[in-house]
Image (cartoon, rainbow, N blue to C red; front, top):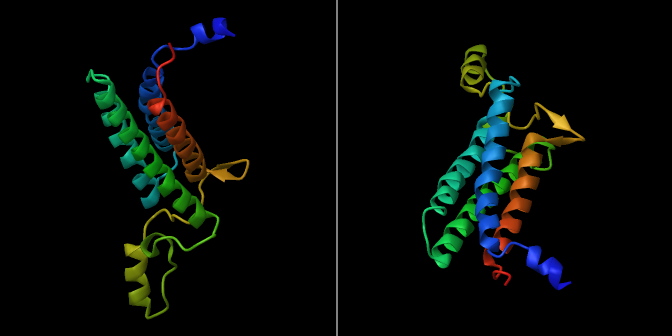
Length: 168
């Protein structure tokens, strides 16, 4: 048993630091890859999910340049919070895609009835890609759903690792 403990990382927050950096990098890279390589056009809420990941990457990268354990832990926890924010947006977006609730009106509302000129004006102002229709799914889960799962699960794991005492 003591032999297994000696193989565990001595400074667990190092793992938290790497996860806080690599998880949003991977998720943001996947989103950009699906856009530029896969040809998927992001809707408004898709783009919203990217901003917290970008901020988390910056904050997590800063955690590699500070020395104090408390400062590192604070930056890693802030990165985890930002990753969780992206996951929360992903939950909201996936819920709109699955029609569990109404999404934001500008992104999901059908044009109102009216004169042909009013309908044309509304159609021109409407987003090209609707937020309440998943462009891609795997096993019934959309990209927003996967972002929610990985972001929220990863944020919890990062927070647990960042607050854990180093194994001696």
